[in-house]
Image: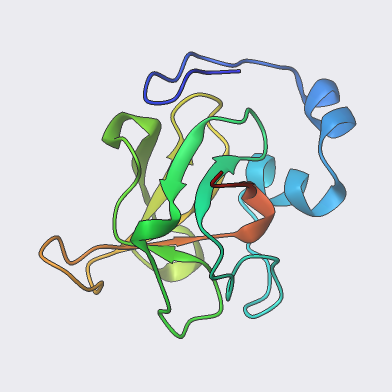
Length: 137
């Protein structure tokens, strides 16, 4: 498991990913799918803790940065550590968006948009199927 704040590279072949992830998490993390809005486990969660990559357990987002964006997906203002996520231009579906991936395993997480609250103005719109949650003790 990557250490918090210092993700190491995780590389597995497709067969290994299929064996470790449920069908929806595989579709999201490995095939860049998007779960339907208002259906994921965490879109309306108010629990305190850390959201981790379901593929490799890297710590990605803290619940203190989670907010209700009204979109039906978990939304965060910032990652826990900037280096925990990477971004790429996504031109799929006739749109220009910025894709967010786990820096450790390259798993697709969602997209980041410049319409969030706070001084940074970012909204990291993340699929619940890409996340696991660790409650704060």
